[in-house]
Amino acid sequence: MRGVRLLFIMVVVCLGIAQAQAIGFVGGGTAGLSYPKDNTSTAYSFALSLGGGLGVQLPIKRFMLEPELMYKPRKFSVGETTATVSYFEIPVLLFFSIWPSLSVGAGFFGSYALDEISRTGALTSALTLEQASMRSYTGGFVASVRGYLFSASTVSLFVDSRYMQSLINPATHGKITLRDFVLFIGLRVGKAGK
Image (cartoon, rainbow, N blue to C red):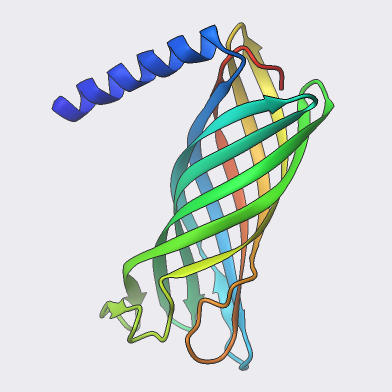
């Protein structure tokens, strides 16, 4: 109950700040498809994973700088086994409004993996990152197209489609490139323009 009260207080404070300033806040859920590629003939396939995130929008002339904090699992399948690696991610994007309700953005992200790689299917035992020859961090670039579907005074509904690719190799042996297709759907609160 204490956590619910704290969350409520934080939402009220954010709403007050957003209405008093030209900054905005975004938050919502993510659905992602991850596709790793390595330098072997391993056949990976997509698997859907769900997460969420929060961000702050800071207007800079016709641009909007948006640092975010995301919880983003990356899930993929190899044969009959599905593996999930959960990440805390910090994307920083710079959006440009090309239409009143449409923006494009680009930026960079850093990811920090949590302890274990969970597995389901043919193999069910969890692996530590060390056992899987993985680093606990990665980073790369992100490109985004965001549309605002509904606006009412200080609240907007948005849909954000993203492509993310790692530039920092997350493997300690060999080379792996992580590619993600992410749909970020949520609300934007604040007076700033889109």
